[in-house]
Length: 62
Image (cartoon, rainbow, N blue to C red; front, side):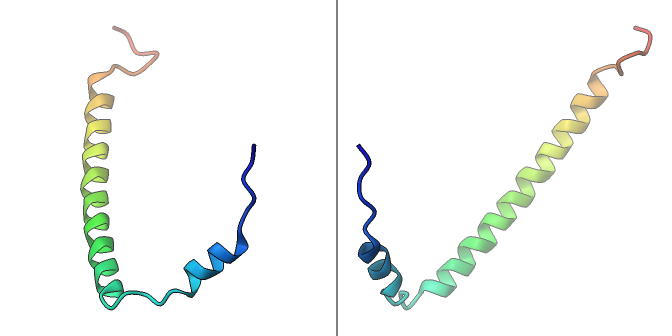
């Protein structure tokens, strides 16, 4: 059974003012997440390169 959607709950959540340390904390989290994403992306790229080098090309002898 689907619950009814309460519009007043959403508007009340939106009406709350942000915390005093909201923006700075948000920026710190964004910076950390972007750095971790960059690291994981580089790791994934290197893994893909090694995997491609390890596997012979389809259609090649051997």
